[in-house]
Amino acid sequence: MARALQGIALCGVILGLILYVWIAVQNETGASQRRLADAAAAGQVAADAEMARIEAAAERTAPLIADAMGADVSAEDLRKAQAQVTDMLSSTPVLAVAVLDGKGGVLSVFGPMPTDAVGGLAPLSSSQRAGQELLGLDLVPVSRLRAGFYREAELTGGGRLPMIFVLRSGAFGAALDAGASAGSGGRAALFNLDGKVVRSSSAPGRAFTPADAALAGAALGWQPLHKDQVSAPGRLSGSTDGAFLEARSVAGGRLHIAYLGDEPSVLTIVAARKTEFLALFGVSMLALVLALSLIQNEWRRDDAENEDAFLVLAQARASCDLLDAGVIDWSLRDGRIVYSEGWAEMFARGVKPASEEAHDWISRIHPQDQDAARETYQSMLDGRVNDIEHRIRIRLPSGLWVQVLERGRAVSGLDGKPARIVLVQTPQAADGAALKETLNGLVQSKDYALAG
Image 1 (tube, one colour):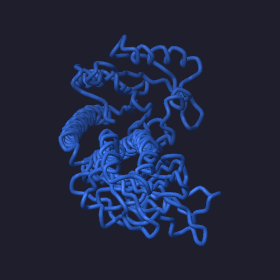
Image 2 (spheres, helix red, strand yellow):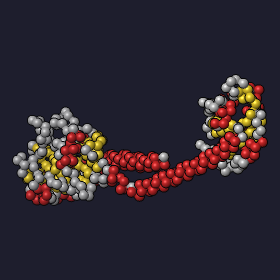
Image 3 (spheres, helix red, strand yellow):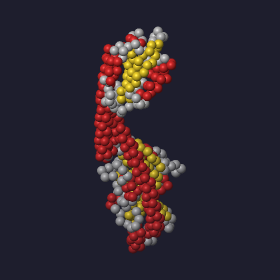
């Protein structure tokens, strides 16, 4: 029994620890999702603001560039215009502007053109997934670190002049870094209408991979682009393939910014809360040891009480057998009454009553003696008296009544309250003088307890 209880208690501790880990995982998972969602909300605002600054810079400089590219403009005026545009772009996300001819060749450059962007300059880019209807893209990557913003300007003599506004390497950095620093494995990317990564950022040791781009594209549900269609939902939240995903539309749906974060593993969470987990485990094991010790001590005490009470009852029964008397053992804990063999021989033709209930014993007493007997027994139950001696009549199996001399003693438990009542009955004709001496030898202190 003790081993079974120990096993049950240990299982309880283990289940408690598992429940703690599960709650910790749920809390950490929810917190990671909230951090990524907060980063996405902040990043969307930052990306919209950055796009507005880029468009404002293009609106301010495009007319000046178009005028400088006129046929009658001198080389000196062109250089002045280039210097003026460079100065105007110094406080914007735009670093330089490349003016293209009809075949995609570079006619002129305004501002310091970075070397990593030279090979990426191309004619106005169109969606590769729009089919026959080519849809122009505002923003496309021109190098690993830079993006280009396409804009056409009208020439004074008619016609349109294509331009590429090459952005600084830090453009959209605030929007992307918000996701990269949002949690474990954080990474972010800015997508154009064609689903291509324009810019990306990631936490140290991580990178926004093509697999991440495919994952974001699959979640966003890119469709073939047409002018009357929306490329992707304006907002998306969820998790897929062990990663959290938050996506937001930028610039009225012309761009999308996606944030990815790794779902925390159980081992990662436990390792992060190692001190807390070990403290809880130690407290749980200590509580288990204390609980088992208390239970085992209680069992030992009950066993000792049972053994003492058994010895007392055995002494009474042995003495009463010598005196031709019957013993009734009344357990007050469970209300059970046990009749001795001697009692059964004298008052029940050798057959012990089947019922062990107290009310069945009371029903054997003569109706005229029942009230007095109940009052006497109640005085022992209340602890007002420890010993009784009275005469009652009890019914025999034949239906006749026999008068008996009943002596009783209350045996107290360790708490000082009556735990068992031992009743000794002898027929009135029997000499019970020796029996009184026997009862005086029974337990007279609170050291004996009821056998459970």
